[in-house]
Image 1 (cartoon, helix red, strand yellow):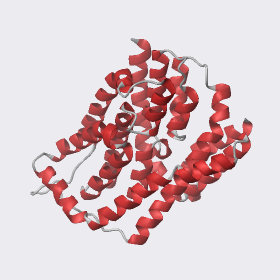
Image 2 (cartoon, one colour; image 1 turned 180 degrees about the vertical axis):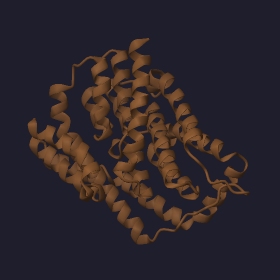
Image 3 (cartoon, one colour; image 1 turned 90 degrees about the horizontal axis):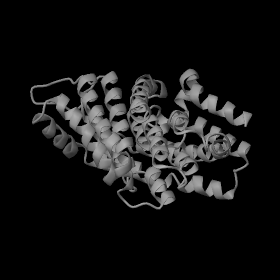
Length: 336
């Protein structure tokens, strides 16, 4: 287990302290994933097949979205600009964050993230505002997608393991998730500064080349493949030291969802033997912390890759927002 602890520390620290890792994050996580799986003794043919298959859907989605964005860039820009003209920019930001968060439970987190990238590419934001808007929207998408089993894999796995109906998650965590989505929308009004123009927001988007689209798609494939190895490699560690802990500890420990696939963690942790409060704590810990770092959730991976947001840039804003949200819900869940 010492080897896994070392890998965990490297995954947490190296993207922010080693330039080579920061600029080659996909390769780094792939190598760390292989190492974790090898140390845990789970690097077999079944895992390799799973790692090869798991990234296919998201890679195709990213590739197709890139092609469609290139082909239909101007019409999409006009539609977004039309929406921005009938609203103030700040209201437009808030509604985008809230609507994408709510819609992600139906259209999936992947599609919501792709739409987010298209919108961000049209908005003439400075670098800081672009990062803030993207991170807040990804927090919202990650939370909203967990409300139905079609939104994201974590929700699908949870419903399957507990043998519950379609609306179970909405009933279980909806009262906590829905206000959070609205809060993230309000934060975007306050923290994102638009460049206003007489006719609304204006496009500064540059068209990508086909080579850039292909390279980005391949990077996403390698990234998700690495996360699959990483998640499976840490499963024995989770089974040994995490399962059976109190809801409070599970809530905070699940901040490791910021670097590990939350669906894998849900599959390892959630059990029908748990009471309602424990399941609620596990899920909220996973989906809130998933927005803190790029590897924590699929929308983060897609958005950061397409918008060239580095791990350090994401963490500088995502970690404080995530910690504040975690602390707030800790008080709601365990104090009152």
